[in-house]
Every structure is written in structure tokens, then in C-alpha cells.
Length: 162
Image (cartoon, rainbow, N blue to C red; front, side, top):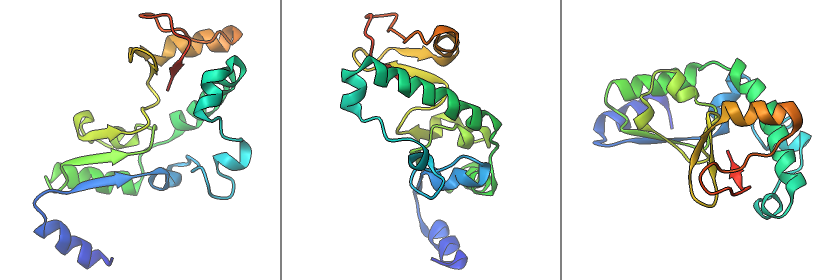
């Protein structure tokens, strides 16, 4: 679609939702998963059942989380994020659905309530049993100290995940 066609589409549409994935954040220095040099070039995926069945796989997931967070913390919104924010501000876009956990849409100025994060974000973890949300700072500090795996403060479940 050309820029002119996109402009016409946005002007004619009554409600627009934008869906974003890893590609929007690569310009900000966050690698995607499948491209050469991406996450799956460096790590084998930890599948959900492996996470649930193995304490070591949960530990590996948290190790990766710490490494990923270092990259995310350095990232800043890029042209794509700013363009999306402008469309939201102008009322042309009613919501953003994203697969990203980096928070760069919000950092660009998009109100939090306009962003639907399919895979959570880099500021909290959730209990997979009861849904309780946990702030990540405390969890990451304990894990970095001695690789203590998080447990849910509400139900005691060992299945806390970002």
C-alpha cells in the first residue's frame, strides 16, 4: 500500500486499530525473533510445557528475561512508534494491539489504556494459576542475587511468568 493509499484509508475509516509486532522495534535496537541475529539464533525456545514441567527451564526463562531487559531499557521509541502515536493523538487510531513487551508505544506518548499487550510487558509478571500481577523489580532483584525463582504472593504457585 502506498503512503497516499494509506492516507486515504485512514481519512475514510471510522475506526482503525493498529497491530504491531517485533518489526516496529528493531529500529530501536531490539532484535526480533526470526531474522538472522534474532533471538532464535541465540536461544532455543522454551516451550510452555517445558516451563511448567521444569524448574530449570523456569530458571532459564528468568535468565533470558534479565538479558532481554538490558536491551529493552536502552531502547527508545523510533519513527514508527512516533508515527503511530501521532495517529492516536489525532484520533485516527482507537487502539494498538501489540505482540511487543518493550513498552515503546507508551514511551512514545500513547496512553496506556490504548495499548493492548498480547504478551504482557517488561514491567510486571503474572501468576499463571491465579492471575495475580507482580512488579518485576523485586522478582528480578531476588533472581539476580541467587537465582531464586518467584512464587506467587497470593497463592504460592511457582508458575509466575512475564
